[in-house]
Amino acid sequence: MRVLDCRARPNTPEYFSLLQGEGIKTVFRKSGNPFPKESTLEDFISDIDKAGIDKVVCTGRDIETTSAWKVTNDYVANMVSKYPDRIIGIAGIDPNKGDGAVREVERAVNELGLKGASIDPFGAGLYANDPKMYPIYQKCSDLKVPVFITIGPLPVSGTKISFGSPLPIDDVAVDFPKLKILCSHGGWPFTREMVAIAWRNDNVYFETSVYHFLPGAELVVEAANTIISDKLVFASAHPFAPFKESLERFKKLPFKEEVLPKVLYQNAAQMLGIE
Image (cartoon, rainbow, N blue to C red):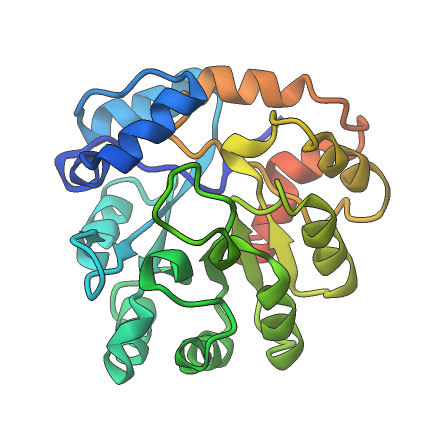
């Protein structure tokens, strides 16, 4: 059974620098997963091979105007160039950069060959339906590439949980009906809301990453088995969860036999337009 991991990052020095804050270390403590060690891109590919994962989505990260977090889109494109059959690159975009953010989407897609844009509203101090985001959404819609929007609860203090609510996503989906939207860390604890938004909007997909084992997350499996079988995608959120253990545990969730291949590969492939 093919697997497309829709959210994973290697522990290369460029990404590993994002893990050094106390808030991020708290995430590992609360999850019970060990804090990783810095490694190489080759180690990353070896790990996905051992786990039986065919392709992974790696995103850039840019919330440079509000924090020190940045992994450049050129670096992501370089990773893709080394492993074009294994890594799907998505550009990291800072919505606080205004016109510069829109130009970077165009450059990343047209010049670097990346397959979409990723934004982090919580890190930018914005809601997903903030007007600052709309030019980015319009550019992605024009270019016919998806946008990845990080939501979810973020198990650390200091950021407003309301920034992680999926409710603003509904506004975006309605205002940009041709734009494919992937909600990262979607679902828990807003599980019912996320399911409803994906069900009512043809252009909304989501993955629950490290949250698919938390209390209340079982509703996501029920929804995939009934009303949104084409909308849920798998993501490990590596390095916050190990590849092999995360995938094996995910496969044991009570998905219907005909639904699991959709969640593990087909839905993401359709959303990304890769087949």
